Image (cartoon, rainbow, N blue to C red):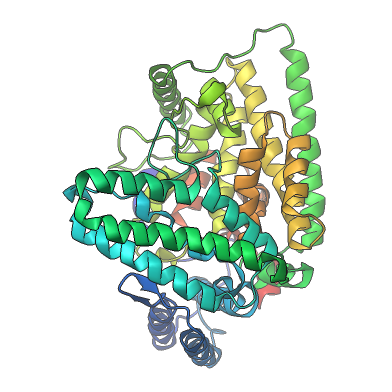
Length: 536
């Protein structure tokens, strides 16, 4: 099969490496698994009534009981005689169920995390008041829902964390300095409350009939801020999940062959490695002038386009992977231009305004945006609906260094320094997250750690990232550990194939396996089951 066909199709069976006879499929049992997966997918969808998510105690308990019934159905299925591909489906369904169990048993964001409720109303004031946003009627519905959502929040936050409450208050009151996902403004409003004030002004000019609803929504958001501030001293539940729960999540949900101790050792090595290479590169380039950041939106846009042209030409020249038919001729960038007061820039702006290559490789091509395009063509039901963060971020981080080592930056020595700084940042996340999730660090401790470890790091981007890792256990380690697993898989495959190994074909085969845990991709691509045996 040529590489283009490999991307356009899916791998339906494991790669044979031992000459052993293929396993016999069990169509009836596998069909039962697929039916169970459909029922599970339906059961875990949030219940939303008139735009308001229902996290009442009765609803949450009903969902938990339904998950238990579905798990009993899964336990009644025996995949012993299935093919490798079918067994992978079984493990994926089981991991999704374990993830839902973890949410109900440990994370419980509806009861612990005020940020869940802030997130539920945060985007409402981004709405256009004009008909292009669904019209005044749609905006009115969202404004009324915001008030109801925050009323429910006060009833449901029965085990709230003070640390998470302080994070939510800050989000309500202040711009995070990153403004990811917000409408582009030269001077962004201050926090969620600022955006509601901004909306109020636009409603007054464009749809005065909605002023009552807009004022009520603003009052609800400000009232929720005041309620959090008043009750925060009594919110004593930890924000972190603890070492035992973290290890359980790694094994049962992420299907990783590592513990937190393993992560700590690997991250320390990656951190030292990145710092060593940065120091060597800086010494090598000590006589060269620095890269000056772009001075305008037009210059930044031109640099982004140049970076993408360079990436695409390099991929084609060295056949590093197949770009599927139908791929758009241009991809967006994650670091859009914004002129901040006093010329202030957050970490990724410092990197990207100097040279967009690192960010564009990671986030656009052949990183997240191209990866997502490939995965949207997945036809296998369980894999089609799966999104493994370790696999996604591991690929995007791996290709940064892959391009560096392949020679993309041979003529951009100062840009190589930026790649090593980005590596340092991703490696430093792991010890920061582990210390957050085991209660060794407060959020401010972790912010200070990142600033100390990583050049160009500042408090806004550090806080933005670390808040995610505190609220979503394991997300910070995805990048490094996914890259480590992918590199190990490449090594295994190269040893198996010898002179027949082709890097571009490896990349195509990896992407075609689907957005699933790398331990399962390794099993399917190589036939090696030493990691998967731990999962059973």
